[in-house]
Image (cartoon, rainbow, N blue to C red; front, side, top):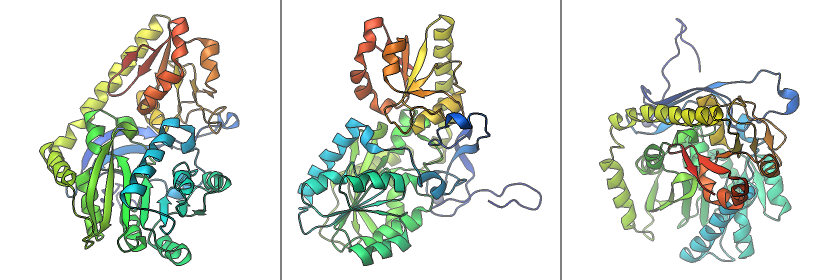
Length: 420
Ligand SMILES: [Zn+2]
């Protein structure tokens, strides 16, 4: 962003409607990119920190971050491999069963997934004999998809790539994107690209964390630089309608702390009539105040309270001589650790199943990331679960910590101890 002549920064503009952003949703201070895990030889080098300041647009109510870092800096060599979460792979399998049946997908259909990652989802369509194409910007994760037999093209998605893909591969009957809409800086170019790529009569499905749940459950740690937008049904419906797409159904699903799965089609496609959930959710969001700026202004004080409670727990535990370690090194952990100032003074180490993270250090806070076996070796009193959305899976897999009286702790919505 350019500076003005007097050195003051101009106010940012809404990435959807271009209105000037004046209202803070929450200011989480300065934070490094959440996937830039530090290698041992980088520990003494400078790291880049960027403001983690979320705004709400008072015109369209899209909650958003400014874009400080271009997507190719973030996503071209991404350390997130979806297949390392068992519950996430199972969620994908259930989804493919549901949509294949509902929309009668078969050998003559074409399914495309935007941000197809390592093929964790499309593998289930391939198993059903339904032709697929993955569209994935990170070459390293796309390579993993190709190795498991999933046709994948490496590129960022937008209007230009939509035209190229249509010419080379055809137009999809089902176009899906899970946890990608929030990651897109140019949301207008992205949704316009989906409109132009979708076959006549085709269906778009997308999943994204629901802003209402973020606010209800204090999930401020899901705010990080890779997530440019925080979406309500109200704001997404506005964006889709602007680009000639109609949302005809919506489901509330439990993933990522509470997400929406939306179903879209061409605006004039009479073959998909609106389900009752669309109107019901629209009314609920309005009743909950999501079209009033005052609702958003209340969020920051809840975030500060959550931070104080977590730090109070950690200080008490350490004063009592207890050992505390982390579990996981997810993006949300990066926001939590940096915002709360939690380093090796509180957490001895954290662990992660992904071999792409183990052996490195958390960005900014430099907590060593070790392999999960270290928990059994060091027998900590508390294990703080950073990917709290996976707490059921993690507490089940590591229930053995009860052998030495160990307990799990979740930081969100408020710090809580869980007996294994
Ligand atoms: Zn706006």
